[in-house]
Image 1 (spheres, rainbow, N blue to C red):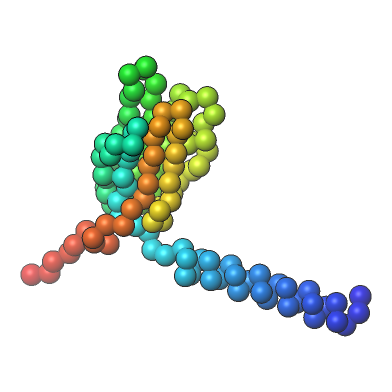
Image 2 (cartoon, rainbow, N blue to C red):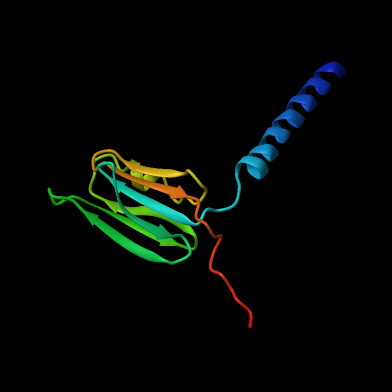
Length: 123
């Protein structure tokens, strides 16, 4: 390879690295504070990401989803839908991240809360 080819390769790598840094630091942001759960377009609950919990959502036809909030992240760990995309999404925690189960019309969206975590008041 010629000298200019190396300059081109290094330049492309530097630009790619810059995009990755911008994405992780600027766009990534801090973890949000709450999760909003909607079924059939209606909000059925808002849960804090700072409290570990497990919620089971059951539907009229006997189907279900199990949502787990642990260590500031939310995931769907069980579902009886055929495609399991909601389970395969994994854990989410950043604002506007979503987990969607289309067969059950379930949308779990990470939302910003007024406060970032529990308040600690020193006396």
